[in-house]
Length: 220
Image (cartoon, rainbow, N blue to C red):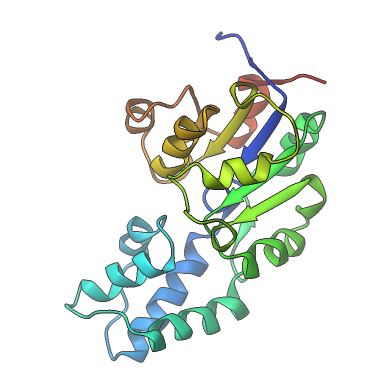
C-alpha cells in the first residue's frame, strides 16, 4: 500500500466530489432547452457538458442545436436550479464519516459554483458544519483551473501549499492544484477516468470518497 500523504489542510471541490449533483444540473439545463422549444437531451449527454461553469454548460446544451445562449437562458437556468438544486442531489456515500475522520485539520471548499448556491446547498445537505471556509467561482478573479480559488481559501491560514491536498473530480481541479503547488487528489467516481487524471498530474486517485482516509494523513 502506498504511504498516506501528510496534510495540514484539505480543500474539496463540491459538484462531483462531495455531492452527486449532476441530475439536478441536467434538469435545469433541459429546462432551458424546453423554453427554447428544443427536445430534452439525454442525462448522459448533459453530464458530459458539466464542469466548466454555467455559461459554458449553456453554450454546449444550446450549441448542440446551433443556438447561442442569451441572458434569458442564463436567467431561466438559475430560476429553475435555485428552486430545484436539492431535488435529487445528495452527498456521495461515506462523505460525512470521511470528513469526520479528516477533521483534525482545516477542511475547506473551493468550487466554481456561484456563492448563491454553495452555502445553502452545503447547509441543506447537512455538510456546512464540516468546513472552516468556502470560496466560490464568483468570489475570485479567475475560476479553476487558475489557482486563485485555492489561494483565496488558504489565505491567512499560514500553511505550506505542499502540505495541502486539493480533492476534486475534474481536470480543472487537478490543474488548479498543480498551479497552486498543492497535492492533487483526483476522484474517479465522477466522470473522468483515472488514467486521464494521472496524466494531468494527479498525485493520487480516489475511486470512492472513503478512500481519502487511506490516501491522506491529517497532521493532527
